[in-house]
Length: 355
Image (cartoon, rainbow, N blue to C red; front, top):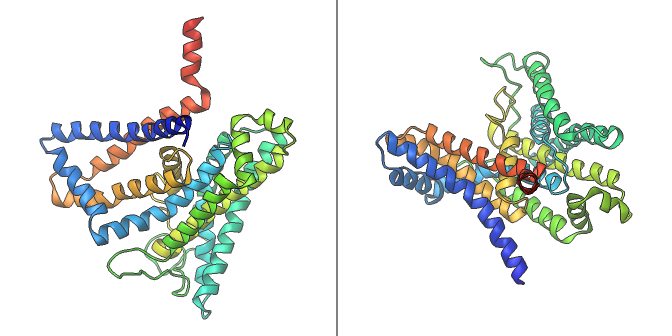
């Protein structure tokens, strides 16, 4: 490995660690203010999330869909396409898989799951293609378009879940529960881990090859550096945007289907929780430097925070909301990094200062 690559790797690791360390440091200050020991609280968090069998399996369970949404974000951001619609593709993919899974009864388990995932991919890609068409044909800003589409879609799915597809036998708003054939069975009983996580690892390996070793991966990198230069070399940028957005929508759709079939089993108004698995994916992609291996590590770490939140509340006097605070601070610090990369704020400031 050349010195340049070593320096780039070190810089990437530092860029990922600094926001996390700052967030934990700020959280430690808050814990001290309320009169508790931050080392004890963080020790419980890490112990229960990563160093117990059930806790680590639950961490992997929660990491699965976030790995996919992280990849869905990374494959577009790396190409300088700011697709904020991953949350929407996840929601519609999960919704479609849930409706399909509830209808398919009396069939073998494997074909049912394949049909559910195929349906989720179709809807996830279709949702992503709307923004792709608007960007390629009308030069619309994909960031604005996809953020608006997320909100519109959530309202459409809310209407469908409360009217057309509502399970009238349930005491709250939800769609019918998927059939047993569509559900992923927990592997070890006590934990939530299912086979879906290992399917995610296969997709992660595929995306690693695509992004690091394939022609498409090199084209994504070229687009990320300069659209005009990529076009000048003969690349059909519009066609690549369609392809990249389709890959992103498919990954998010699979994440939604997996979350539906392994954890939720029916669509509710809080299906993707708050702020949402798609938004978590953006955070994870930024933490992981848009690299598949980095995304795997970041997703497991971030899922560990979610797994350990209840343990902090149970085994210490620190409220579990401290984890939400840490997560929010990580988002804040990474958002600063993202906007700097997007708008070159530091470079512009230096130029203005020199002038």
